[in-house]
Image (cartoon, rainbow, N blue to C red):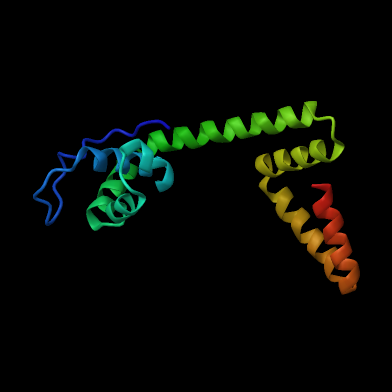
Length: 149
């Protein structure tokens, strides 16, 4: 995970006369980058309950909001990079998978990511087709769709 930059000890917050402990600074930064609490726990050597208690405090919430607000550009860059990585992965699956169903699913996903209206139209069309079927036929059709994916 990329580190977000903000000196958490220089901020003034209401009712906060104690400086942050090192594990609190690290946990706050990691949580702001999207890391789950159970993954943060071994990194800061603190119990999950202690980290959860800290991260749900008003002081931690204010720090996390500051981190996110001050690093919006960096977060946007990370999200764009993740989107590019996922698109490249889908293209690799589409081009190299020996399974036709996987290639078709990857192609559909690429279309839905690059042309957002495509997925909505496909979902609407599928729902319209299913709603005209008898319940037993609808269940069979849904099972076939799930098995193909």
